[in-house]
Amino acid sequence: MSAASFHEDDAVAKSYDRTLLLRLLGYLRPYKAAVAVSFLMIVVMAGLDLAGPYLTKVAIDRHIRRGDAAGLGGVAALYLLTLLAAFAVRFGQVMILQMTGQRVMLDLRRAIYSHLQALHVGFFDKNPVGRLMTRVTTDVDAVNELFTSGVVTVFGDLFTLLGIMGVMLFMNWRLALVTFAVIPFFFAVTNWFRRGSRQSFREVRRWIARINAFLQESLTGMSVVQLFRREERNASAFAAINRAHADANVAQIFYYAVFYPAIDVLAAVAIALILVHGGGSVLTGGLTLGALVAFIQYSERFWRPISDLSEKFNILQAAMAASERIFTLLDTPVQVAAPARPARLAEVRGRVAFEGVWFSYQDPPLETPAEDHATPHPSAQRWTLKDIDFTVEAGKSVALVGATGAGKTSVISLLTRFYDAQEGRVTLDGVDVRDLDPAQLRSSLALVLQDPHLFSGTISSNIRLGSPIGDDRVKEAARAVRAHAFIEALPGGYDTEVKERGATLSMGQRQLLSFARALAHDPKVLVLDEATSSVDTETEALIQEALTVLLRGRTAIVIAHRLSTIQNVDEILVMHRGRIRERGTHQQLLAQRGLYWRLYQLQYKDQEVTAAGESPATATA
Image 1 (spheres, helix red, strand yellow):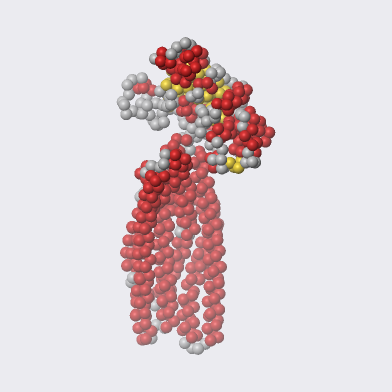
Image 2 (spheres, rainbow, N blue to C red):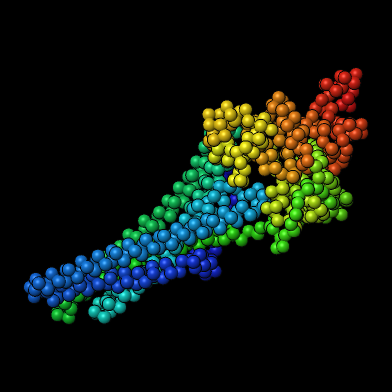
């Protein structure tokens, strides 16, 4: 496991993208009234910020120099009132804007999560979970900064900046131009800061995504890590990623450490120029002392919005990088989608048919069905399934057997529409599954996997999975699969808390719960993918007894390596390298002495061969 094994985040081509920004601003449309009020408050706040230095000028020139204590008290009261008004306006503006930002985050996260749930399983096979988690969490937070601290407040900084420039020019245009003389140096420093911080920011975001992906993979597989003593190796790999992330942050800190002190130095130079030029004007009578003090205060406030605008640039850059990744995810096409006008089955009977199905995980595959019969190029992508054709009548059962990689699980993935076939079709009751609403299709199926997945919650909630299933039905399903006894033995019974991934339960118990979950939903088609591989022999015998009754009236498709579990199915399909090589009942396939017979001999040669009076060596020859 190495840092290089994770997907790179694409770098943002430019720090500002008008299309991305407009698309982001579209999320503000439902809250345009709140944004308008916040914008108005920012304008008022900018005006109030301009009042302070001017009131200082009035206090010095009209009252302090003349010894007018009464008038000075009035100006002081007005100054205090201005501060209180600014506080109230700023409080209201921050509250409104922050609440709007939280609502936008809520909408954006909901949109991302809904889209993730609509994507087909193959998407998650190719994208690390940690990387996707970064999209929903860290990237959305970066966009939130744009809404709460950037897109609206930048106008406040502009109004304040233009207002200060206008007042300074009105008061004394010569002194104002002297103050503005340092602006070109500021732009030079800002341009250096933007170029350097942009690349360092990209590095920080990329390494954050890698840390999330690494942690998710490592923590999920902690039992394997400890079993194979990979703690030190994983710790070294994580240290490398963490160090790279720290180095990227240090590089970013360097630019901030230079930029803000440089701005302070430029502001100090501006004040020095004001003191030198303005002080001389005061001595010659060309400028009042109050105006000089007001100029110094305006100069200090002049650099604040400029520094803020530079910070807003960083927020804009972060939002552009985050939004590009978010919208790339949101624009990922939903390859397995409901048709515009889905067919609807009035009553699902459960007849399943595969009609000339060809399927490859690479879309499109590098070879056509016709080319498959020839000798393809060794590097060509092989078809996973080749000309699969079989029918399971309603209420009947079929088993798929074969070596690992023969294509058994791919058959199930096509039936459940986790993927779609490139050639041929899969039907339920004569209707192509691609023409059905996925909700109706999947509600007609129940899938029990080899590795059952449990969610945080209770035992009963993991059986229901949110469906309106009563307690009696939950317990009936549990009894049928012989799970009721161990559930009742738990401290809380059916209300016992289940930890993440069912960590407090054994593999066999989790498997039994997945059986109960499937049966409680009363499907017309029951799919078992190595479903008894994680239970002991005694429990398997109990489940087989229960399934004999529970599968009655249901269509069943069973994938199994234990051939003892499928001897009573109506038909067995033997798959090899993506094709169906043999089909028939258990006895018929044994009589053919083909692939199935060899598989059977490998599992039961000691018992069966001895009973037939042959030596194991003879049987396997």
